[in-house]
Length: 68
Image (tube, rainbow, N blue to C red; front, side):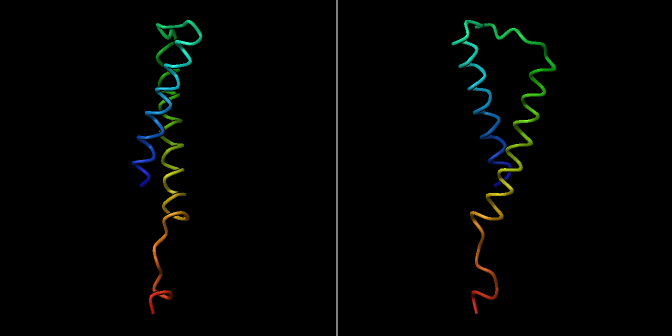
């Protein structure tokens, strides 16, 4: 789950970056390379964290106490 959330977050961040670049009339998305790495790294870490929280709290399975 954390890896799926990471890939989803990185993809959506990339799409939003492109959409706002086009809306802001910056079609070439002029930015230095380190800015792109920072965006990708933070989106990846945020996705991993969100996936971990979803796995732990949202999709938790039945524990052994609930089965018996």
